[in-house]
Amino acid sequence: DGGITQSPKYLFRKEGQNVTLSCEQNLNHDAMYWYRQDPGQGLRLIYYSQIVNDFQKGDIAEGYSVSREKKESFPLTVTSAQKNPTAFYLCASKWAGTEAFFGQGTRLTVV
Amino acid sequence: GENVEQHPSTLSVQEGDSAVIKCTYSDSASNYFPWYKQELGKGPQLIIDIRSNVGEKKDQRIAVTLNKTAKHFSLHITETQPEDSAVYFCAAISNNAGNMLTFGGGTRLMVKP
Image 1 (tube, helix red, strand yellow):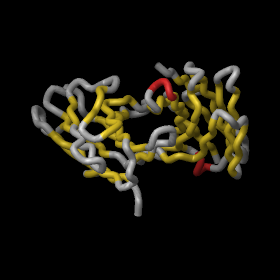
Image 2 (cartoon, chains in turn purple, orange):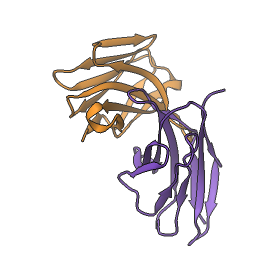
Image 3 (cartoon, rainbow over the protein chains, first blue to last red):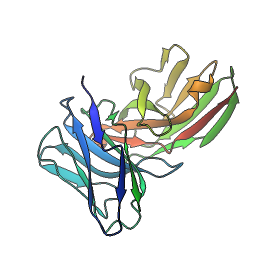
Image 4 (spheres, rainbow over the protein chains, first blue to last red):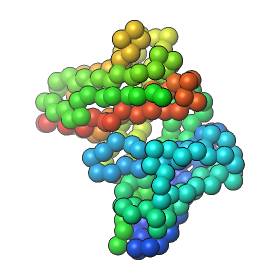
């Protein structure tokens, strides 16, 4: 089955800890994206990558980091510098000029 | 860059009534407009899309219209059902913006039985 997979579905982070959210796609899409969604809010772009080994900051990149070493994978690290990381994180991928396909999301909670 | 505005932010309708959600965009180079439905705790799913060379597209109870001159597009859901309750997002892709997808702020649709 082709698709985009995020893991884990739920993640708990202690204060001052870095955590990494996984995003894998087998759709052969060039572009991948990370969004943050707070309760009752829209989608805010964290980082995006349009090609392997290249990525760009989105609107709210502070406290986050990414890598794009393989076309299929675009992991997001939430660092200790992100002071309010509790949110729902969505990964997406697409070809140029077409719709984005979303994963099922990771809910991150600070404990 | 592209800016997409979506209205209303919340919409409550009675089951069987129609629902209309409207979006405006700023970049005249935008040429692709998808609509997504997001159910609670899940990722958004594409429900319908339209390209700039088409004025209207229909899929069963869902239709999308596009007015390029006015730079606005709308989602129409007829004969609403409780399972239509969700958050809906419009989006636009512009060649000027490196094919980035710009989302509207979302509309929470509630269909009352």
